[in-house]
Amino acid sequence: MALEKYPPLTEEDVTNLDKYTQAETDALLNTKAASVHNHTESNITDLDKYTQAEITNLLAGKLDKYTSYDNGSSLAIDGANGTYFKIATGVNSSFTFSNLATGVVYGILIKNSDLADDITITLPNTADILPALIATVDIPAGSYIEFSVFYDGTNRIWQISEELS
Image (tube, rainbow, N blue to C red):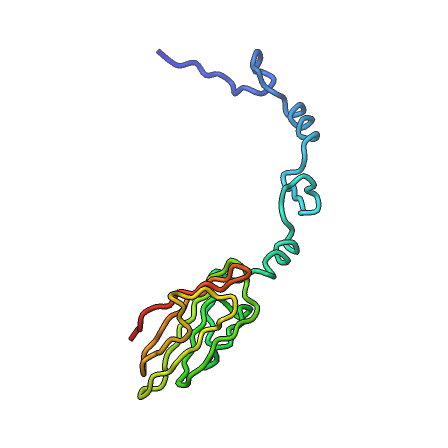
């Protein structure tokens, strides 16, 4: 049995088919936006967001969560420089503070750089809450002591480590 050959079909030959013609498709596409469509930030009016300038201003007064600062041999702690201070000193000294932010814990690691003699660190006595009313801390020769101080807006609340070697 031989197969019958049919001539190729054209669009006009197809009937009863749910389709759009080329002309109908073109007409529908003409009512649509271009395939490349961009908006800029200024085009969006109902977006709950901060601008870059607002974020910059909000962050300007904030400290990084952890900022280590090499304070040299000075016990003058300036909160604007960070939240963790490394100090190496071989002389008796006293803490002074400036620019402490409320609600921030500051860490201070002091190394006695004198390998022969102990040094004495004097803690401030104004508006401070000290463990067991400690006024001074001795650091053995070549050792470290770590201090943590929390500023609540009025008081500095201290925690002092044991000797670290």
